[in-house]
Each structure stands twice: as structure tokens, then as C-alpha cells.
Image (tube, rainbow, N blue to C red; front, side, top):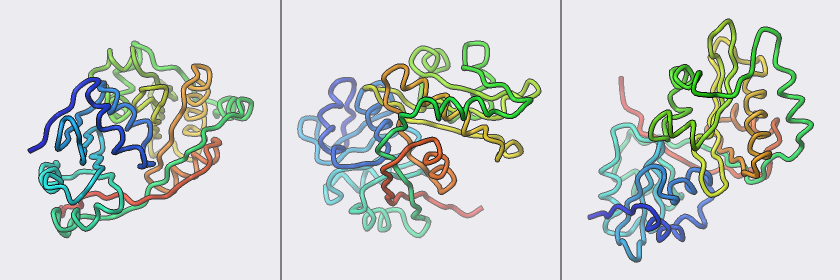
Length: 253
């Protein structure tokens, strides 16, 4: 049986995440008690933990009796982040639909403000960069709900998070946001409409968000799910990368 940790009690699970490099901003948000759900095997001395946000993050000892129970409680099509030691249990518990892929986390953030500002200024003609406010948050979320989905609601996002959007002919076509923000760390989420890609929009919004982080003494965190995202991070100025395995459930149909 698992136990949910709430509020400051979540800090008891922090040692289980300490050596795990993935999604540092998201993990900080989960441990803060402000985002997601955190379940453990023992409320006082946890040996295994499951953090649920947009990802299912599992850490600790995969041999713990409750580990398989945690896996069987996952949703139908989860994105799973876990140390490599979990892979045998993942495969035995979740079956043939489990697919492995590679993610890249960057452990050093950009610091060249002039370079970042030049990327923002290079936005093509016809496109307008804007800071997301109450007037745009509904459209921002409609463009891509993942930009705000970790917050309780849009009011919580406006109060505790931030984002930048690119508008073209009155339509939001690109966005970058604080996927989570806690303990001085910001996990970055970014997206561009398919028919507006390769025009520097992601570069401009990503750079604007990083500049905003630097102005507020926040640490921007970039964890790339694919090669295109990793290339963009490198161009913006993130460095010291580490590639690690992750998994998702692939279903037919």
C-alpha cells in the first residue's frame, strides 16, 4: 500500500531524487508540495517514490514490495521517467507495449544576455512576441494545454508562473512557459504550431523566457524529449548535457 505525502512532508522523499538527474525543475516542484501528487511506501522512511505530474517519475528501490503496485496503478498511456535499474520491473509489469526512448537534460543554463536578446530581436516580420497576461491566458492554453497544465488553474499560472507567446494575424502560433516553478528552478515547456516552424519562433520565445528567469534570479531547466529540442536548447545556450533513458506505453490504434 502506498501513502501520499503532502506539503512539507514531501521533503522526506528528497534523498530518493538526489542522485537522479532528470527534470530537476519538475522534481523540485513536486517536492515543494505545490504541484502534482507524491506517493511513497513509508511516510517516515520512504525507500521508493512515485511523483505524478505530466510525467510518471519513479525513484528508489525497484525491489521494494510496493514498486510493482505503483506501476500497475499507472494510467493507460504514461510517460515514465525512472532510473535504468527500473527497466526489468517496467518490462515485466507493463508488457510489450513499453517503448524506450532517450531524453537529454542540460545541467548548465545560458548566461549570455546579449546573445539571448539578439534571438528575441530576430523574430521575423509579421510576428509579435508578448508576455502572457490575463488577456491571453485562455488563448495560450487553447494553443497548447501542456504550457499551463501543471498549475491548478489559469489564475494559479498567472500568479505563480509565466509564459511568452508569439502572435501572427491575431493567432497564437508559438509559446514557451514555466512548466513548473519551485525553489528557484523553472522547468521549461515550449511549442510551435507545425506550419510556423523553422522561422525562429521557438528560439525567440525560449530566449525571452530564459532572460526573464535570469532577471528574476531563477534557474531555467531544459530537459529535451527529442533531438530537435536538444538542438534548440544548445543554440539558446544550455550546456553540459546528459542523455538518459525514459519510457512510454505504446498502444495499438
